Image (tube, rainbow, N blue to C red):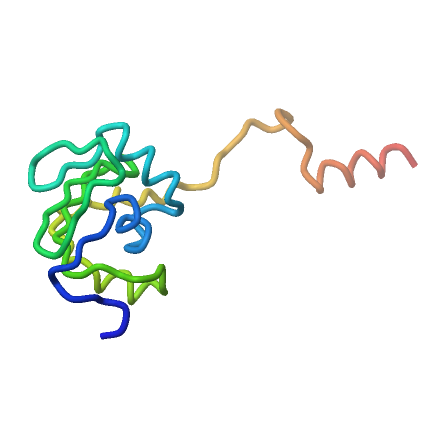
Length: 128
């Protein structure tokens, strides 16, 4: 596959997070790493220049959830999403969706709140 170098190559952690589209910019990746929100093989990493390669397991606290990613390859560019997803295997626990609540329309007492179009027409009829 184009864009995936030989397995022995290593790449900066911040660059890999950016290539894999985990974060939008390298600056955000550097802040995430410096904040102690990234672990490589269980060890907390605070240096964005830390080298990672295929076989490493990343544990990342991002967007109010924990992601567990196994690096499969290093990208040489920040390509489209399908190419980025090919760089890792996601072992994160699934996040259950909140149940959808279908609520009935809100009821209000007659004469309270903003007038409806019908109320406005009746008021206009009284004025003329």
